[in-house]
Image (cartoon, rainbow, N blue to C red; front, side, top):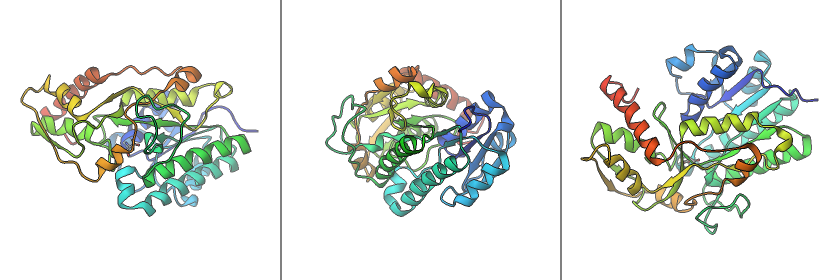
Amino acid sequence: MAKKEMKKILVTGSVGQIGSELTMELRKRYGAENVIATGRKTEPSEELRNSGPFHFIDVSRIETVEEMITKYDIDTVFHMAAILSATGEKNPQLCWNVNMNGTINILELGLKYEMARIIIPSSIAVWGPGVPLENTPQETVLQPTTMYGVTKVCGELLCDYYVARFGLDIRGLRYPGIISYKTLPGGGTTDYAVEIFYEAIDKGRYKCFLGPDTKLPMMYMPDCIEGTIQLAEADFSKLKHHSNFNHAAMSFTPAELAAEIKKHIPEFEITYEPDYRQKIADSWPNSIDDSAAREEWGWRPKWDLAAMTEDMLKHLRERHAAGKLYG
Ligand code: AKB
């Protein structure tokens, strides 16, 4: 019989853009000593290392994960470690190895140690050409054209299989592009929407690797963290979906984001030089329908484009003034 409480939490990918902020919030809510942060290679920030346990592991090597689970009597995993879309296209085998072997290792250990809960995010990358581009429904054909998308579709199916076959409590959301000012993202197609803020402040101009009219679903980090924890804490018996909730907040194009930044930095200039990431972005929806998340666990985003832009610039200006824009 699985334990039901989330008491001892392991976060994989805790040095990454989402993992780093998620770990700090979980430490606030569940106690610093109860949240074990892990990463693969990148050194953690001082905040992350000094606020609770931190270890290096490799999610594709099951023994390194199992060592953490037995050492700390882990009952919950937030599995954030993944190779994202752009890096995945440069190195598809690495993407498959980390994303698929990492996921099945976590699921197998979840069974072996009768875990209370496992949270494994998915992404808007599950979609490919041919889906309705506006308000893409929860249930629609999943035919991604990137390796990252392939691993996310397989991951969703695998998670749902472990729920149905073994009764494991697994939850996951399809993240849009996530925007934040604490940790830079790496290897994604939506990363332009973070880089643009740093360069607007640092140089007053930005060369965007996507074209001006490339509309994509996006979300500010506080909404991402709140939604992730809200889903993790939701009543399992009320969930009809498990591993694949569409998770939405706002959608915009690079030109619309630049216009919003210009309201605060009138001299800001943007130019466009689309590269290989344009093709990836073109295969993803413009906006997604998150009504299943709203109905089944009460999801409501708080941040829109205007509020997010103002907040990003405020925090990054403070960092710039302190000579620490890039940390
Ligand atoms: C990426 O761009 O690859 C990620 C994602 C949308 O999952 N940010």
